[in-house]
Length: 70
Image (cartoon, rainbow, N blue to C red; front, side, top):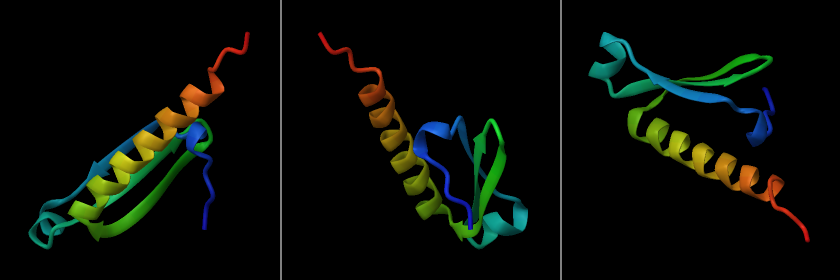
């Protein structure tokens, strides 16, 4: 089990091989400066949802960290 803060995630990739595609499965790879973590053999539709959710959350956290206080 890996715990990765959203702001550490630099890239999110979804990959699927020929056999995985046949069964609508995918792997989600989260890339950070320290390495990669993978969610293996999950439903392709769920993989897309996870990617979208992580991107939204990461962007939201980036906005909060970049707030300027006057």
